[in-house]
Length: 113
Length: 113
DNA sequence: TATAAATGCAATTATTCGGTTGCGCAAATA
DNA sequence: TATTTGCGCAACCGAATAATTGCATTTATA
Image (cartoon, rainbow over all chains, first blue to last red; front, side):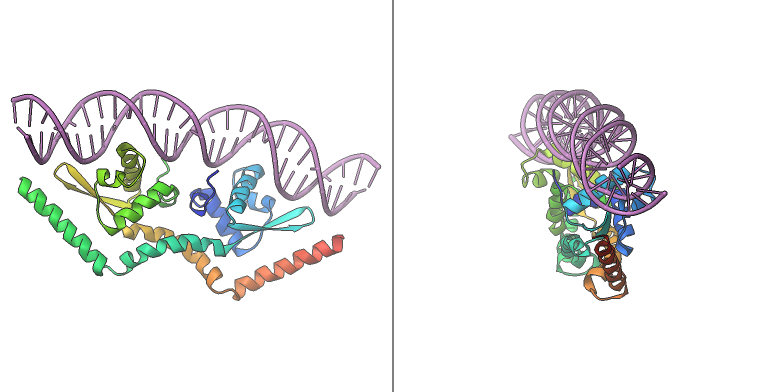
């Protein structure tokens, strides 16, 4: 039962659900209408999303509205942070290190031949 | 063979590998030393990461240096973009809509009792 | 009150996944 | 040249996954 955010957003259907309910809270039935899979399948996805706190429930009579807990998505953003430096700033210190290593590797290859 | 970035970063070991080689390119053996799993297991992870272009290979004799393709990580960042508005700006238009829906739901619940 | 609707939960099944083991091949080394 | 090293690939295995089907429960409605 590995229920972390990364595993949750790995499934394309779940990502679609997340995008769908980000705009407005929806019931499982309403969500299922947007997909080919059954209501039960959607319900299962919602359970997984709920377990890792990516979505919140809001009971209203016999209907349950699911809505995104955008705050939880920050966890992914937080993990991404460490790489943002690399892709945004192509010529920073880290990049220099990589360049140096690349040169070394090429030199070694040259020596071999 | 669903080989997209999201599925690739779902596995914690793969995320650890990514973080590891983000700092400097490494060979499979060197990477495997950082984990409990075997070299072959790491190699399998590297194949998956390579297939979805999250890492690049650099042959040097019989050694193969793997390094992060940080650019590919942007895909995750791009998907996250749609939610950033929500979590960063708690009182925007979208939030108002959600608030309204919440009120409606509560009202309906009140009527029921 | 009887029926319909909305939902969750359990059992089942086919598929995928992560890992190990064993092998073969190319490159380095003694 | 013989041996060691670094690596990828294929076969196999147990666990997890996504989906379906069937059922039970609660709430709304005729």
